[in-house]
Image (cartoon, rainbow over all chains, first blue to last red; front, top):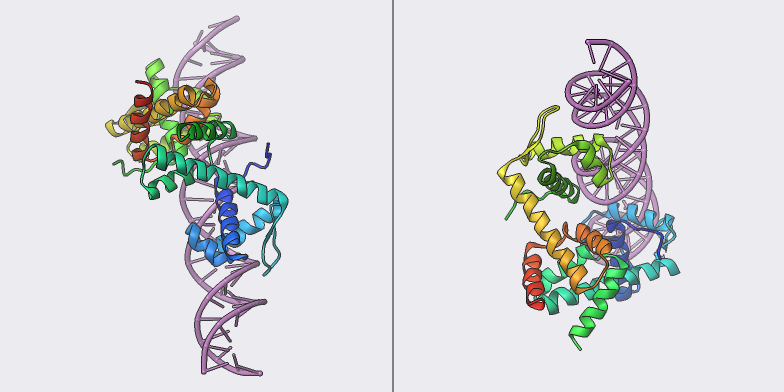
Length: 127
Length: 127
DNA sequence: CAAATTTGTTAGGTTTGCCTTACAATTGTT
DNA sequence: AACAATTGTAAGGCAAACCTAACAAATTTG
């Protein structure tokens, strides 16, 4: 499918970028840094990296925008996160915070196929 | 619980070491290397690392043995792997290989609490 | 047992992702 | 507009994990 194979770290960045963008119609490095608990300079690096990979457009001191590919990828990660959250929270009964933490980590390592099965499963259970 | 916080990589190593040890009553770096798809030199490094952390005993050109802590830790990881495998294989219906791959990756990131809930869940479902 | 093969180790490199520090650009405030 | 504060970037470092290449120890085998 997506032959880009982002690292967990870059997936975190693009996910954060997208959600912050949705909320604010703009993205500040400071916010990304806060959210991911990293320094502003690390955000700069990651942005450079994502731009190189063709996922965002971003020049010096410019607002970022998503490429089609970047947007799709971000949505994929977010989709994974949401279904995993539901699984941990609604089915396993973890509290909200721990469900979210687990989803955050698992979303980077679960296969697409496993995700699809999980979607069907969660939906079946909660029918 | 375990305040050691092994990296995913070191967890893989100790898991492999333990399973190979169980099977052969001894561990060769070559086998570990094959199994984890790394070079022998990387295994040497990892062993040094695990020994420093007090999980195994291992001197130059010596057989390794596990400390109590190391053995407990290995068993923990293996336990996680097994329950995750069951979940992916028996409940989600992935094929054996993909179930195993997913278990291998998720075992390093899922919380102990989530694991406990998963154990209960899988056991309840399969009652 | 001596030579050949296999195995373990070391040294030195690479990549990724983070950091700190310092500076540049932008924005906000009087 | 001028100064202050905030934000973005660049440079240089560090640690984890991996690698290759070369060598050392151990094992196999003719």
